[in-house]
Amino acid sequence: MARVVTMVLAGALLAACANTVPHPEVQRAKRDYQAALDDPLIDRKDSLQLLEAEKDIQRAEAANREKDELGVTHYVYLADMRIRIARLTAETKAANARAAELARERPSLRLEARTAEADVATARALAAEETARTATQRAQRAERELEELETRQTERGHALTLGGVHFDFNKTALKPEATRKLSMLAGFLIANPDRAVLVEGYADVVGSDPANAIVSRGRADSVKRYLVANGVAADRIAVAAHGASDPLQSNESTEGRDLNRRAQITILPPGVSAADVAAE
Amino acid sequence: MRIGLWLAAALLVLSAGCAKPGPSDQAIARADYAVKQAREAGADQGSGALMRSAEEKLARARALYADKEYEEAERLASQVAVEAELADAITRNKIAKSHLKDAEKVLEELREEAERRRRF
Image (cartoon, rainbow over the protein chains, first blue to last red):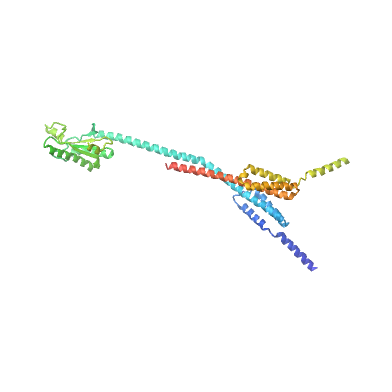
């Protein structure tokens, strides 16, 4: 009797064991299912596939209990497929959402591109305008300054009259009264780098021609030195000596001779360099 | 009265016979529908191998059903349905990814253009 009871108990235990031995494929499918449930990308609420997968896993477990190996394989296959579908669908949804987001960004970026282009165009126009304006302003200012320097328009440019007596007899040093206009000229030349000057020295009729050539040359050089000392580049100043030729006044009187001892300065038109006139 | 009863019984038997078309009929209809849906989504191009497998299984399921192998036919039909649904999902996923790639490319080009114009 006791033997029979033991045998029955053992049989029952074995049966229980057989019923609860989990199928490895079902276990794997369960883990995959759980992982899908935990995936934040997959919305559980609208994943009918996951709901179906859960049912398939339950059916696979039931088939396992009934030792229906084919049934286990079948339902695990279905569950696997549904989990894959759920993942893919969630991925598709995310990709579509991202694409829609990018499409919304597009118009603003297009506008940005156009704005950037417009900005550059505007900046360029402003710069061109500014250049034109400053060029005009500079030319107008130069004209005004030339007026202040009391120049006269000649065929070679603007002739500058220093005023008063420039040099003492047989001397090449500038008299102080002549330097007032010269310092104004230096300022003009510094402000207008595109302008050059021609300085021509003259002598009165007193003395020999070679001596007058030397002294007239010395007077032109004096003016050049003065301008250079006041900041004007030497290569912007052309010098020439004319001796006693081309007197302004009659050499008969002292006053006349005083005015004939002179330096004549011509402000050359824009674009004409000192080298251009020195070559003549 | 008697005739009426007999008639009712006969009708019941007949209707029961009609209503028992085999348990897998619905499964086959569902599978057929899923295959058609997938084909509409372009799955023949998007997931050709899976579609061919599904169609081949569907033909086998129909044959099994005709041979009254209902359980086997139903299982095959449910496999056909999930395979077609997977083919559908793969196809839609491919399309979405390609659209996203295009959108990213367009945006990248616009960004580069804006940058180029800003730099003159």
